[in-house]
Length: 296
Image: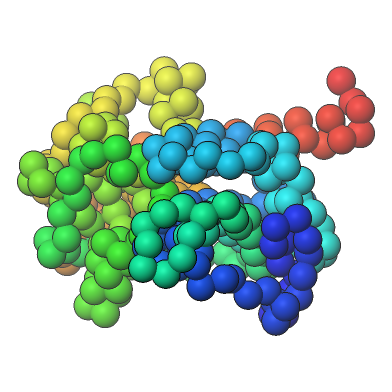
């Protein structure tokens, strides 16, 4: 698709957009990105994405003038001018280097937004569940950079590729403590028969937007949950498990390394959270429509 791209305040055709080779995202992987899903012309979890983005900018000390409202305008402008309602959006923020061979930061910065028609994940991921492989080649060391969704994405990228080449849907990553930290493309949750568990941010997972929404939904609906370390043995002994991310939302995990989780089928707790998530999504969509038309 040869669509329009938002590039530093202007909408351009793809062939017109070129990133300067001094972009630090290109040179060093020092950039930030957000993957967002638009539904019916609305980006339902935009506030959570922007909160993470601006936190990442603080961690990377990316001090340049850009406001949340400007980014919101860029996203919706790109969405609407590409005549899309259900879409995949990719937001990227980076700075430029002073010159080649130098670590000095230049004065330039880049804000880019891409939009593509949304393609639903395969239905089997929700009806049969996902399969995962434990990839032990790349371990996560919990530090402040784990809290940043940076363009230096090598660890999850390679782990995911290795799992896919072996015939699995997803990769599982360990941290340096030997505990499960996350999936290559999503946060991990398990149900041990009594409560739902997910690794805390101190264990090194990315602070996923859907993870945050699910935690809030469990609290609001009085579901027993806990943030705590998860070992591989805990996952294999669990009754249910699932991944969360912005595109798949909540996707059941029914097997790991060819071993079934629980019965090997989508469990009741996972289904309940999938329903609650869709209710939250619908509520946000209806709230957006009410504000747009001035309905109270």
